Image (cartoon, rainbow, N blue to C red; front, top):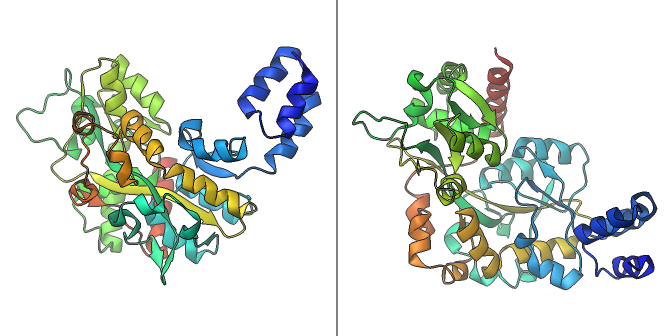
Length: 369
């Protein structure tokens, strides 16, 4: 291996971080070449995202244009990313769901996205970019990327509904104590508990908040664990350690591919429906490259990958033309996002006071109070 050639390729943006790591490992030059890596990283768009979205299939046209992948620190949940960026962590693009956008905008950590810099914007489904929380005063503060549902993935060979309709109550069923799991994030688990408790999510009073907190406390001792990544919960469902878990659309798809008998529940109370995407930080150091990254993520070919491999809907209408009807049906998706978004309970922003109380209650529940 010619190390001089490797370094030159790195300087020219022709070598990916993965290729560089392999080259360094092969010749034991990690400490020698690392300063070059750091220098190169400063020139990349910085994409702060969930684990699992830090993969090259999400941004192929960005790499084609710049010859290098974006830098991708990951977070555990949206609240963590908000807290870190507000405290000074510098990134260009973040990946929240739409309900987070108003609060983040009010906190001053965002700036509008210039859609004139996005060649793929013309294909974005209007029902997604026009949703509540995405726009403000005629400006676009949120670029939708993926959309779907939070519901229950359960083992059909183990769970017995005893003739009843599928319900969120399965995650409170004492027959399966110690074999249940929920997502370790308030914006999923708290809201699903609210749906099950039957509170009015359009008018969250202190009484309603107390009802949800009590419901979460009742559920807490029935759980095997709370998962922060879907791989863990999928492995536990496959082995039979879990019989049911709160998941997104991707988990039943992955488990079905493995031949595990599971179903994504059509819960009678309504699934939690959501749209997630990208936002631009107010101090983004790589403004143009940040837009290149967002543009890459909403490309039709990326949408095809998200639909087929992740099991989520995508924001590009053109992406659906690349996917068969059978594949859409198998993933519980529709070519019309409104068919899904209007079916369940849509995750919407709340007043900052309410959001603060929700996160407070969630923290207390986890701490065991």
